[in-house]
Image (cartoon, rainbow, N blue to C red):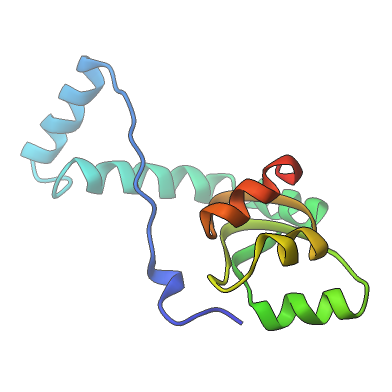
Length: 134
């Protein structure tokens, strides 16, 4: 189950651009093609992702990745632990682990972590899972 509001979250990134590229972006902004640099960059990224959608979908299926948001609650992980089971957390998007999950519970129930996007969990849980993270 996806926690309310998690699908609207964004992740901030920093990129370095050559001065000529940056100047060209600024020219397109000043000519009204885009509202600002961020608008240009988001549009360029979405265009590129749309052009490669088939490849992305095939890769997601091959790697058995969850596409979107995956939230692991303490209750879900306790159920896995009690059943003697573990899971592989493979997400393309946002993966979160509830704040009340202990590092011990995470280690007992999560055998592998592969997140392409953002991974949010408590610092102790992240540190415990680091050796299992791709």
